[in-house]
Length: 475
Image 1 (cartoon, helix red, strand yellow):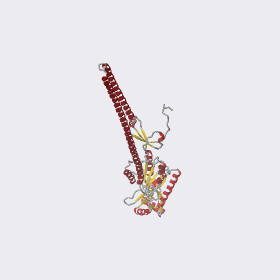
Image 2 (cartoon, rainbow, N blue to C red):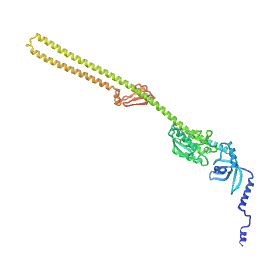
Image 3 (cartoon, rainbow, N blue to C red):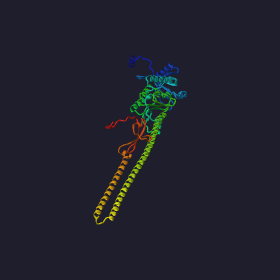
Image 4 (cartoon, rainbow, N blue to C red):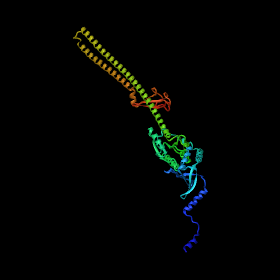
């Protein structure tokens, strides 16, 4: 009864076993694709060959809005892989990589419940041609928007010591740049932004790193990557990355690949260097050149300052000797005049006393002492008075001479340049030592040396002005 009811509900038809159905699908696929076919798509999930030497990845057709629409598994077995790699030696610019559109040949098969392709060959011309065409389209678009020279128009700092580095942390390119900068001894400060430089995630990773550097604003950004095939470097031909470089607020220096490689990123950057090491060397040379110029300038300033100080010192010593000589001469003359006046006064006093004594002695001989006693006494008093007057006159003459000597010394001291400098005055000379007395003695661009009470200063004339009357001065 149960069997009859089942037969009624489910009419008896052929029912496949799993193995039978799988075999039927395999035969159908074999009949549909009796020979190898060419298929194109974007590589995804490429993994390094395992211990067995086989290589596996997927081919995808991508939709820009929804991601992959179709996926096909691909197997490249060891024997076929060795042959393909041998053939690709003729194409050094081509290498299988994630995100790369390729055209491959292979056998379609159904195994393990999936349809896949067993790859036997690849067409590098298809991939390289598409890359070149895409690169040309990006360059034309950048040129049309005026972006090829945008970053190059930014001024490169004279001493770019704060460096932003965008690359894969720990890579050979990263270590080359850091080693070159450190070996210079110039005191570079490096901010590293780690980024993927190859594969499907490389573009987004590089864009994030550049955005971080735009916020940080170092003196300069180095975007570097080691060597590789044209396909390895295809990320640096992308339009989004190129536009991000053009929009950077600081100069971007690129060192991508080997000496023969030129990417779109190189075209839009401020400066393109052949390698990562050359990129770092460019900065080192710029900084060291600035250092050499500074050292030369300081040496020149020091030499000129030393010469100016030596000249000013020599001139000051000469003038001091001249003042001292004149003062000594003035003092010597005053002293001699004082001694002469004192001698003449003393001689006159002695002569007067002697004459008076002789006159009295003669009068005494001619006259009677008794009669002339009173007159003699009076004469003696007159003699005493005359002697006192002579002494007072000599004292007044000596005091006048001493006052004249002090006045001469004060005038000499007042004329001493050192005292004038100490009171706040200054002396200004040209670079060759000529004293500047008026604005007309100099012209714009002349170098002046000003001596103060303590020290000196060097300046440059920027402009001169005509003389103006001092406040309160008579016309």
